[in-house]
Length: 428
Image (cartoon, rainbow, N blue to C red; front, side):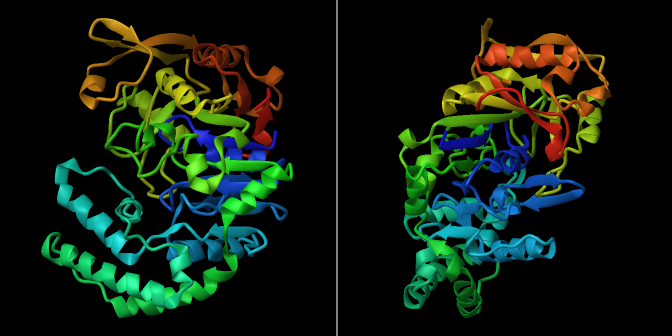
């Protein structure tokens, strides 16, 4: 195994940060390939907790190379705030440990302003963005007026592109959205400082990752968000602005798909999502609130409470298909401990038929009624398990059904937030 992917098999918040940290121990290189600082990964090491947004989770190790690929949109302000936070926590962040693609697009101040104003203008039809400028930055990327990291390192090029963009953006911000114009001179001064700081970290990351794989180093690709937030395969329009599936890796870093050997999908033992959008198994009752409280289901980036529901295996099976998942890592089975009975969705009743896939149309999805199987629960002793044999029998039956329904082996089981509450039970 020389290159493998860790990605979310639900709507994000599945525990990818913890799993990346856990698997990074056997990796040489950890790579982010999409998204931006709208992501939130929480990693617990001993009695310390780290909250990461943009920097790969492998940064907590001293001997790993961490890569921010070209598919990521980079907010320099957020980047250096996160570096400052990590260094205060005793984590070194140097150009020897972190490199950033020269092809990555920059989030500019007007992207954040546009994100907030456009969301406000949508009113009741808002999407529920984080307001970090992610969507507007990707929009500029595909409109071919974006500013890349390599532009930032050429002062004249950056200034020309910035002034041209500011002129157009200010027209839209002031005359259409009713906001205040931004000052190009102020941004120029600010981003010149960023250019000096970011320069030592900038590399052609495609070459570095390609060479690492060819040298038989182990490369871990770390996804952000989850499969159902993918711009193409998610619950559109309630999605993120990038490809969160395995297919996003090749474009997001610049290596061929034939170089990737495994793809691990992370799924909680139940289902959550943040913000608006469909959620067939949502529990808007005491059980849903119990899961939210016990599982500490609040967003790392936004702080918003997560909607909670029963495990939806239709979603996970869709992730297996779309991303070619070779195994699953199941997290937070400890959260469900204490429930007498649990339910798992194994299909949707739609137009008189039972289907096991996720419809594209939200109107069709609204007509889908979950088909459940019921399981006996388990107790809190599950959190003390350090091998699969020590997991309660009812929890094992639950896990075995996940594997059986999705047709995918389970490689990792997590029974708590800490590193030592994670166990390998099979091959990736």
